[in-house]
Length: 73
Image (cartoon, rainbow, N blue to C red; front, side, top):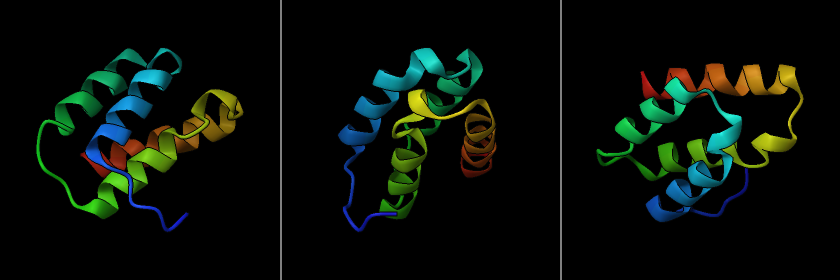
């Protein structure tokens, strides 16, 4: 991970640019999760799991999906 802190707006923008590559239920769950305040660490983790999601292999996407679900559950 990088040491740049990503704002709430950065995370929302990244989600919006990648949502067509994510499952609909995961997008809905992420939007619902992000309605609440979260630590900078959580925001950074979500941002990096979404970053270049569209370029990731199927296996990598499945791994990231699992990590995202663990974070937001």
